Image (cartoon, rainbow, N blue to C red; front, side):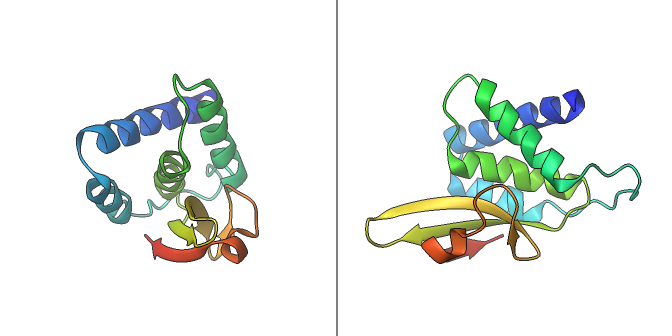
Length: 125
């Protein structure tokens, strides 16, 4: 678990840097291009453990972590461990707000399971 938390921390720092010094397009392209890495079935941690590692890292991160940062880092981490994760960005019209979460095969893995009922999906990558 310590290795997963360290890996999550590095990914959060990378996402933070990309959002601060580049733009959303660069972050989107980075997530989109991250291929699913084939992993040996025995050594692959469960998706829940990977998402938990990202959540744990967010708790101790040096500043508040936005849902886009958390979900981008979780998507990259999941793909690096062999899961076909998708970053999903949605919007709610009234009241106006947006949110990001991660899905694997259409199932929300890092947030509440009813996100698609609350938000209209704008983008999946």
